[in-house]
Amino acid sequence: MINRFFNNADMNNATGFLYHDENGGKWLGTAKHILFSCNNDGLPYTRINVMFGRTNPSIYLPIELSYIFMHTKIHTNEDVDIAMIRISRLLESRYLVRKEYSNFYFFTDATINNQKLREGDSVCVHGYPEKKVDNNKTSLKKLWGKVITCPTEELSPSLRFCFCIDQPVEKGMSGSPAIASNVKGSESLLVGVCIARLQNGKIAGAIQPSYLLRDIIDNGKNLPRWLIG
Image 1 (tube, rainbow, N blue to C red):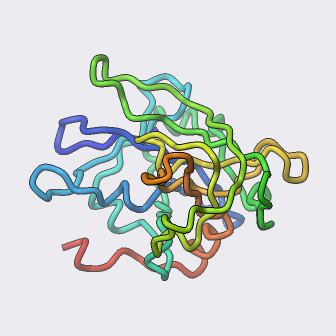
Image 2: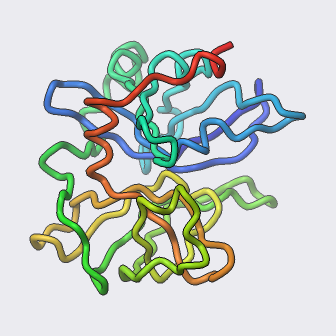
């Protein structure tokens, strides 16, 4: 889970996943738009805290906005709504995380799906819905759906890269990993990154395919200088 903060105020949450590339790099993947959503009269979030699933809540990884700007890669096509933050050094520098992260689940190049999914294939999105207002808590939700044709009325530029599932994702689940249940018999094969709930149809979630991760790591670009300031 990714908690977003403005200074010390806990604003809201999103979702991400861990990825370990063949060269030893460790990354936090998520939806690009959740890093740059603005709040507080146009000011961006100043920090995110990465919480590691069922791990002790005292074990988290704070990432300042300045680090995100310097260590994030995005796709050269602006319509790809995925961001990869290199966190190798951060994992080693925080004592409690360093002791535990060998137990965290990392997707790898071997668990990335490069096949095109077919209509009717089953996909499970693992994410954290937005925290409840009354108790400021959330928990992991597994959303099962089947691949469908994206509704034509919803095909904005960012959705040209997407496949859709027949279940609406909830707020807070942007950046969630989508996992196939019937591709090569694997239950942990990453097939995509959830980026949107399709608002008009109200029956579909939009997912950008996982092969884009390698494009970003190998050929992606750093964040624009105007964002860094």
